[in-house]
Length: 235
Image 1: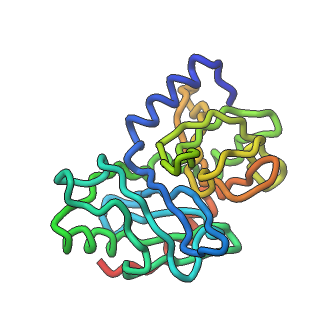
Image 2: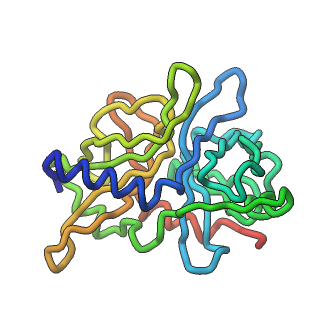
């Protein structure tokens, strides 16, 4: 569904308020080929064991990478570190290259925070807005509005939270963002809007951004959900 510019701006603002604290800057640990991307918290169920951190599999190497923390995602203020080396977290990443997705059960992240006398203060993307197959199928060859929440990479190395308003299309089984995104956007969640059965416009998280040239495939949530049951947590 393609919105007018004013409506798109309204959706972008609302997303920052509702799920802005789900989003974290991520970078790989490979010094020879360092990659910058975004990871985000996803809550698959009311049970905290159902919470995961998601990103693109291409970003995650053997060393696990590094997550940066904004001040707003932890409490009390000033206690959490500026960054977490994911190699210190157990369980670590589970990679699913065939689907383009990497999943980190967050039990280890919460335990790490507790050991450091702080706690996470995040807004996970809820399962209720994760796009099912019927929503994915509504994406068509006609461009629709898409919203990407990500931590870009500025010239000074800073990683601010940004919203890119883009266009998304479906070509066969592939959902694609039509323009190449800035550095740091791979792994970020992609949101879109579609009318529901009653005609009301509803917001959905379509999936996450995968690497691409002149555009980006989207790992849609029907694919992501398929791998989540295979991920073991140890909460």
